[in-house]
Image (cartoon, rainbow, N blue to C red; front, side, top):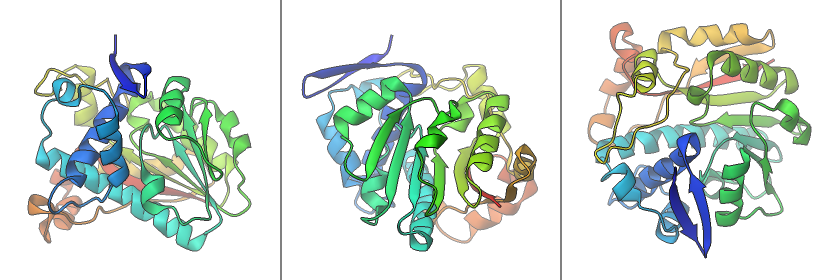
Amino acid sequence: MGRMAEEHGRRVELSGVPETLLWNLYMRAYEARGPRPVLTDPKAVELVDRIDYPFEETFGPPSPLLAQGHALRVRTFDDAVRDFLTAHPDGTVVTLAEGLETQYWRVDNGRARWLCVELPETAAVRRALLPDDERRRTLARSALDLSWRGEVDASRGVLITAQGLLMYLRPTEVRDLIAGCAEGFPGGALVFDAVPRWFSARTMRGELRTARGYRPPPMPWGMDAGELGKVRSAHPRISEVRELPPPRGRGPYHGALVPVLRRLPGVRNLRPTMTAIARFG
């Protein structure tokens, strides 16, 4: 059974993969509260303060290093979306399974359209806490049900984000989803993240736990940094795939060492996550 979150009298039970949206929110809010945050996210702080959920009892006290690394990954996605909105100010951003991600409040330009595709149980949570508005809509549908593509106005450009999603899918599902995006949105792009194979294997064996005993759901799909080029084989329309470097942060995330480590064959696959963009010709 999942734990209970309550907001304004509404109770929502979350378990398995959907419950991870609360961990993601917890990490962003923790980093945003710091004295020198790498991510400014007042909406995440507001949500953590509003939701009645045992964050620390469930996930343990936040690790500053882990929270900063997560926030830098989030900023990598933010930068990709900002670049898209600069080139396509009236375009559409499609977010697949973003949970309680608050990117809209960080990067929206006041003109773009946003479509959030969520499983029904997480769509209900998102609508309750972050109600839809004129330009931002939540669609209760699995990202694997490609009928969501019919809900997208692609006439002014499309960027799709899959943040914290693909690792929870089976390899064949990942390939089909990427191919479906490429087929449905010529001229568009997909920004996604991946965990390396060693990390995926540890989750499948149930070896990862937090200080409070929380065990992340299994992640069947992993991809090492050196395998990124294989994504192009998912569909002939994929014209480019490249890694997006994260911004520099504090401490071990600062300085020239980080970009160097990203290029060393023996080290680059040890990173817990990688963010990449696939463009569709």
